[in-house]
Image 1 (cartoon, rainbow, N blue to C red):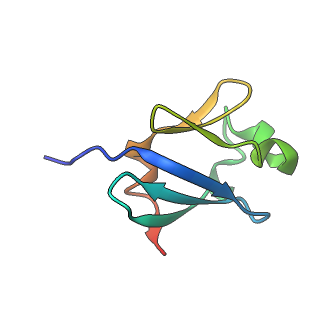
Image 2: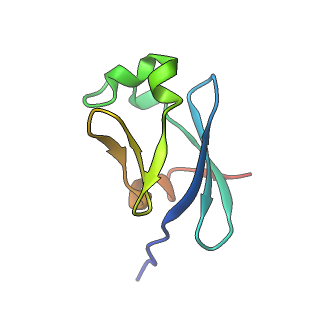
Length: 80
């Protein structure tokens, strides 16, 4: 059984990557660029909006009701 790890910190980059810290202290990088042509992520192509990423209950969220859950982020990210 997989353990669900919440995101506790997020930083964005100009190349649409999320620098994530999970509750176990692990730092990982998630590349959002492949998702930016898909709903609901299209608005995040605007870097000023992408840069507004924050954490809400362990999930990365943006204005406009856009989010990516930790169960997606962790397995699809790579260790730093």
